[in-house]
Amino acid sequence: MNRKRSVIKAVVVGCALLVTLGAVSGATPDKKDKAVGRLLFGKVLDPQDNPLPDAVVYVTNTRTRAVKTYIVGPDGTYRFPALSTAVEYEVYAQYKGHKSETKSVSQFDDRAQVYLDLKVDAR
Image 1 (cartoon, rainbow, N blue to C red):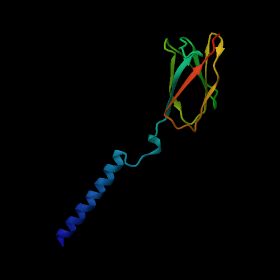
Image 2: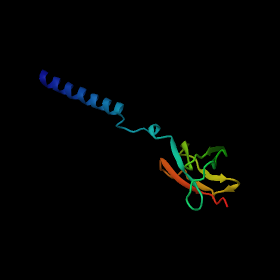
Image 3: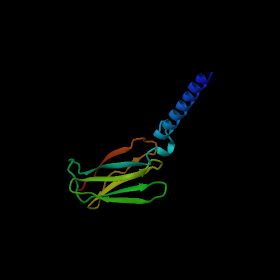
Image 4: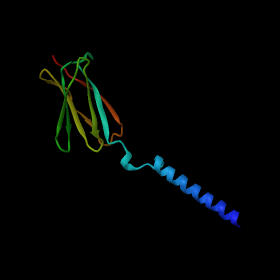
C-alpha cells in the first residue's frame, strides 16, 4: 500500500511539473504575445521602374491623422517599422512636386510585412 502511494505521488508531482513547464515555455499562447507592429516598406520609382532618390514618402494614420515621413535614399527604398496592426494607413510619395497614387494598408491585412512600390510620374 505504501508503494502504491509513492507511485501516485510521483505521478501527481510529474504531471504538475509538466503543466508548470508547459506554462513557462509558452505552450499556451497569450494574445499579449502577438506582434504589436508591422513593417511597411518598398520603393519609390518612376514609370520606367528607376528609383527616385530624395523622394518623400508619407504615411497617414487614418484614425488620428498623424503623419510620418521618410526621405528615400539613392536606391529609392523606404521603411516604416512598428506600425500598428489595428489601424488603417494611407501611403503616398512625392518627388519634385509630383505625387504618386495613394495606397491603403488595411487593419484586416494580417501580413507582418507589407511591400508597396509607389510610382511617381515626374515629367
